[in-house]
Amino acid sequence: MDASLRLLAESGYAKFSASRVAAMAGISRGAREHYFRTKNDLIVATLEQAMSEAVAHARSLAQDAGRSADPVAKFLADSGHFFFSRRYRALIEIMVAARSEPALLRLWNPLVRKARRQLNEIWTDTLAKAGHEPRVARRFIELTHYLMRGLTLAGTWLPYDIDRTAVMRTWHALAPALLGAPALGGHRRR
Image 1 (cartoon, one colour):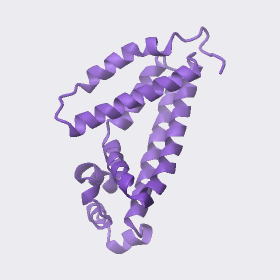
Image 2 (cartoon, rainbow, N blue to C red; image 1 turned 90 degrees about the vertical axis):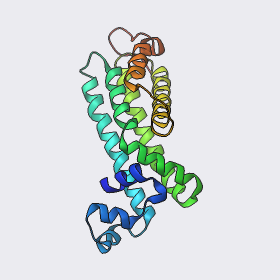
Image 3 (tube, rainbow, N blue to C red; image 1 turned 30 degrees about the vertical axis):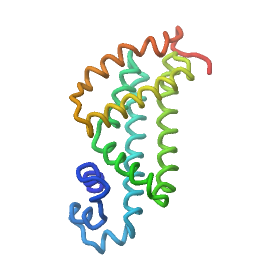
């Protein structure tokens, strides 16, 4: 799976093949075919692992956020860990390819929807426990992810010099205005 992500991120979907992944991973063609008969089988397994790792990472940071004075910082750190990673660049390659490959799109969409739903629930619940209105927290999560997707795309494929750290520091500073003040006692009703 790591070789798949690395190849997608470094060379793109157009140069992705199951045989190249097997060569990068140091496994035989037969071993690769035993587990992943087709390119799409390998891509789906790679996507499933990447999304599972993202959900596990979010759960870990969200748990820490419950003990933190700044759960928004934990959310932003988790989101940055995902969107500013080689993993996400690889997933963008799959997403673009899936747009023109209906068989891949049918496999891609449910996996991404499931992971996105899990991640949104984790962070909505965490921010709600910190006293933020769940509806507002969900909107903040969406806006943050739109911002991070844009930063990743611009920083990866466009000739822009982006200081992501400065942008995210500014976004963190704007968070209280976007989320509103938490309710006293840290819990709001849903």
